[in-house]
Image (cartoon, rainbow, N blue to C red; front, side, top):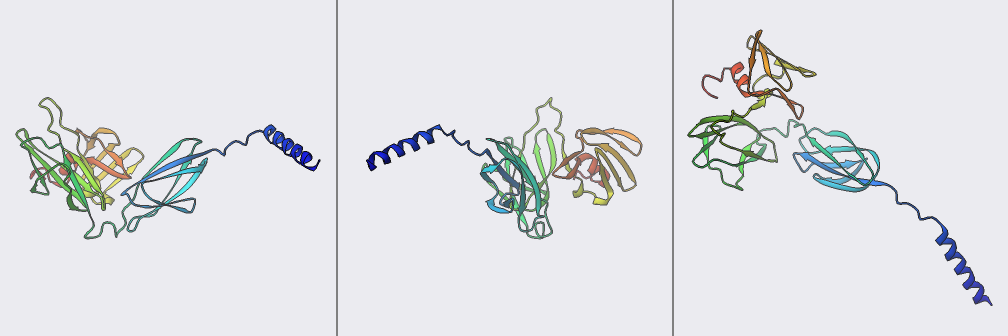
Length: 257
C-alpha cells in the first residue's frame, strides 16, 4: 500500500510540474570591443574581461560601462548599450599619453599596391615594398612619396605605437583627378594656432587667417576664397586639413616637402 501511495505521489508531482509554464530565459546580448592600438585591457562594469579585441557574451540587456586602459595611453571610460540577442560593437581610438609617444616608441608600416616600376621613399629614403613585409618605424608622422612615370605624389602617414599601419598606393588613371590628401594639423601647426567650433575651423598662423568648415573643400584665406582637393576632417578627435594648405601656410610648397 505504501508503494502505491508513493507511486501516486510521484505521478501527481510529474503532472503538476508539466502543468507549470516553462520559465523564459533571461534576455541577454554580447559586445565586441576593439581598440586602436589593440591589446588594451578591458573592464565591463568593473569586471576585467581581457584584452582587446575581446567578445563578451551573456550580458544583461541595457547600458554597460567600459573602462579601457593601456600602459602609456590615456584611460578611456565609454558606455555601450546591449540589445537582446544582438552583438554590440564598441571601438575606441586611445589618446596617446607622454609615455606612448616617448622617444623610442615604434610601430610599423606595410605598403601595398605599389605600381610596377614605381619608386617608394619614406622620409626621403628609398625603401623596398614587398607583400607581407613590415617596415619598423618610429611612432609619429612620416612622409611617404610615390614616384612613377606620371610624376611624384607625397602623403603623410602617422605610425601608431605597437600597431601595423597598412598603406595602399595606387597610380591614378590618366583622366582621374588626384586623390584628396589630408594630414593632421598638429603635425604642421602649433595647437594654439587653430580652433574648431562645431563645424567651423579657424587657423591663425604666420600672419594668415584661414576659415573653413568640416567637409567643405573651400576656404577663406586672408579674405579670398580658395578651393582644395580635400576638406577638413575630424578623425579620432584630431583635426585634419588638406596637405596643400598646410604646406602653403608653413612654406613647404616651394621645396616640395
